[in-house]
Image (cartoon, rainbow, N blue to C red; front, side, top):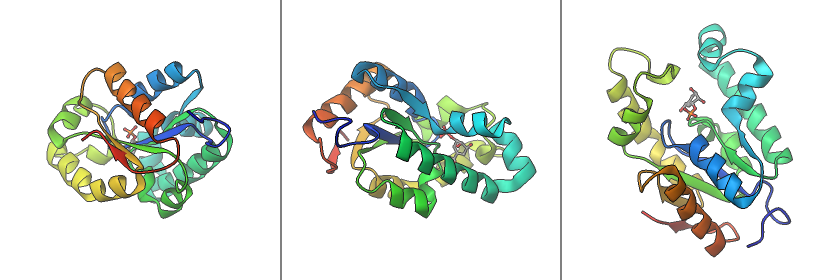
Length: 183
Ligand code: S3P
């Protein structure tokens, strides 16, 4: 499989909150023998404040600008596996920058995904009915995830290691950005 020579990064994981992008991405990177970076963590490291605080103090629009800058930098500089925050691909400049990359859409259902993030401090599902909000946002974004992803993997197919193996198989079968799916 061609990796760093032609692809920088090796793979980019996208998908909604709770899909397991960071957990699966870390395992995938270990199996490929490359570094892993999570753009949410990188953003928090650069800003020196947690994401809910950025949303509260600066608003969602400013969060998306900071996120865009972090993602564009990481896509330019990182050679390993990258996990993006769930809303990053909704920013057109991010979606455009992903063209030509191997982009893995980790797909999760609204019920499975919500179970995983229930009780977390994610600002976009704060409010009276987080499950409904989760469902609505996922429905709004699914088309974009599918369009931007060059391969789709069922995030609920098994333990994170099983999902990472499914991605490895797709990467081996589709070394250049092409559409492939396990769902
Ligand atoms: C967001 C997802 C979060 C984080 C922020 C906004 C979103 O990342 O970037 O809370 O818009 O879906 P995860 O997908 O890692 O939870």
